[in-house]
Image (tube, rainbow, N blue to C red; front, side, top):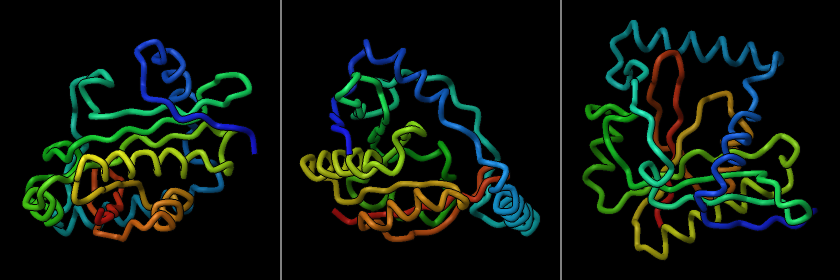
Length: 190
C-alpha cells in the first residue's frame, strides 16, 4: 500500500478538493436494479405518509469552514494528490433529517452529537484503507472533544460504505427518505 497522509483542511486545498468531488462517479450500470429497488421503497414510503419522508431540501451553498467543525484531506505521499476527504459537523436539524423524525428527536435530546460527513475516496484510491483512515481520524477527533455520539448516513445501495461503517463499530439506527432516496443512518457511542 502506498503511503497516505491525512491533513487538516487548508484553504489552498480547495481546487484539489473540488476536482476530487468531480471525480466521484454516480452509480454504475450494474447498480441499476439496486437503485430502482431503492426508488420503489422510497415511493412506497411517500405514498404511505411515512413520517420519515421529506422532500429534497434546497440549501444555500456554504464554504467548508461554514459547513464543518473539522475537515481532513487524504493525500498520496508520492505525488501529494488528494485521494480522499471527510468532515465532521455537529448534528443540526432541518438539513436532511426532518425535525419530526424519531432519530431527530433522539439525537436532539442526546448531548453532543457529531456527524461524519462527505467521506469521499477517489476511485483510483479505493480498497487501500483511505476511507478507514479518514474515518478513524474523525472518530479520534470526536472522542478528543468529548462528543457522546458519532452519526453517519449513506444511501441503501452504498454497500461498501455500509460495510466500512459497520466494521468501524457503527450500529444501524434507522432510515429516512429524501426525494427518492432511502437514507440509512448509523451511530457510534463514543
